[in-house]
Length: 147
Ligand SMILES: [Fe+2]
Ligand SMILES: [Fe+2]
Image (spheres, rainbow, N blue to C red):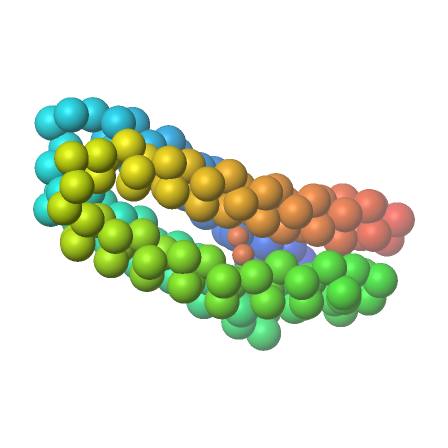
């Protein structure tokens, strides 16, 4: 496989992970609004999601992850730098969400947590959407010209 095609395959994997993470976010959102979900379960689900997101971030941060797009389409560099820099913020927010699920004692813990999670999910999905746009632009526009 030519190196540029190896990069494209890696990018397909990232795209598939985006789909899977979106489904996981939906499931978690549903679980948080279900009265049968207690705080321990909510915290456990958030930890599982955070671990999946962490693995995804590490894949994107590898040299053959999103930076690969810069070698295919150098004009995308500043946008790739921005999305990679956003990972630190999401890591912090996930840690805060887990801490909130573990410690919040008020009667409204569920709706507070669901609201915070919804705000996180909205920002996270916007981030993933931008990455999908970058993948699309690098491999479908720039490489279409070479095919
Ligand atoms: Fe990312
Ligand atoms: Fe991503």
